[in-house]
Image (cartoon, rainbow, N blue to C red; front, side, top):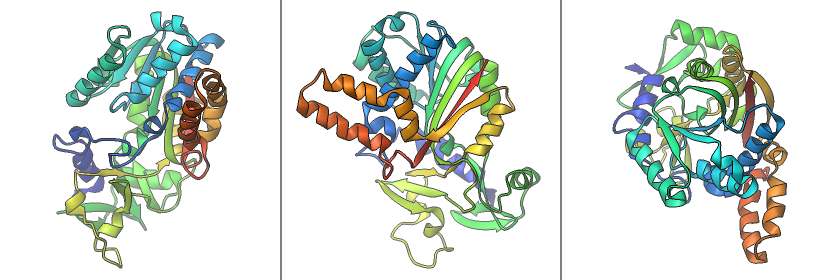
Length: 338
């Protein structure tokens, strides 16, 4: 019998785990992300980066860092939009990917070379501990929902034995976190404090932006779920706790599908602020992308392509801000460190 966090770590990050298999993301994968939905997701982030440089907060020689890049689509879109909007920056910025898994790094290298040849250089680091910079613009998309967690309910925490869930005694650290955030039922993420501290130690001056699903306060319920072939399975619907019988079971999905949960952004905020960052904005993804300049980018596109091409890209970009799709399901939090 092991704590759920250890079970989740094996599911996602073991040598034969889900992420090590380089799963497909998008229509042919288990789930889609904003980065696979429209290039304007990376485009809006590129416009934000340019604004941060032009405001003087970061210099034109800062590092542009993505963490959790997977195939590298978002970083590639950021580069492409910088080329369109402010091409001189490509001569001064340094592009960095934090990627611990060699197989994924090689796929990113292949994709960037296919996209840019030798025109744009990327640097790779296995962890934030290896990366050092005076200034950095750091971005992550759907990163923190993949941090391991404990699951709690009515004063107990979840353990796993042979893919079977068992609630038992809560350890001291988990109990402290439940008290701090008044959580009686839900997930307690592990690793936020370590991540924020490593980022703070790596970069002297920084803007950090991340998008994820979740709420500013704990949701008061268990959100743990599995994504497989664009279908969502609440975790406990695949166990003996479910009243009905599901067509799938944990054995068939273990290490072959994505395991995730809603982010408690208050916990994330506390972790970053304790490491010297200040929260600058928390809002829906729709508001963030519009504030970053998404509408301006679509106007530029309209003036430079055919009506048919514009309508195709517009339809994809609108999914990013549609309240019924990604616009309000995802939130953005932005931090700065002076």
